[in-house]
Length: 171
Image (cartoon, rainbow, N blue to C red; front, side, top):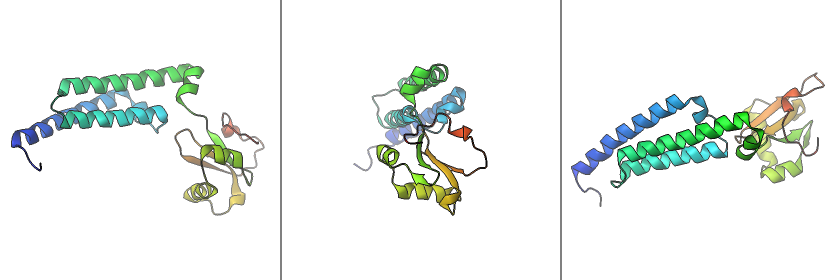
């Protein structure tokens, strides 16, 4: 089945252009938060949007209008959850994880590494990616809620105020 007919190809192109345009317009209207770095909920919405787009493109049984309603529903749900998580700490706790301290003042926090399933090599790679040549210049490495690593360089400041809200099992 390499080719059935030109009308199916034409339908795929036409519906693809219209569905893609509708998705881009809806994402622009919904704001930057919809396309932010991903936590678990954002990932689910992104995958669901992609799956919906593929279904609209390839399934004759799904009308374009139904697909656009599906897009709108997913984007609305993402907006509502994001809106609630900004206003409610209990919703935020359910939707987002807590940043995790992995390395602090020259010491790897092995319990945290194990619970987050991160290796020391990955922490070293994160340090290198952020321009660190010598680990003695690093105050802390944090695994952020979106899965990225943040490396904080040593400072003369006694207080590490940017670590507020970071889960640290041993500090």
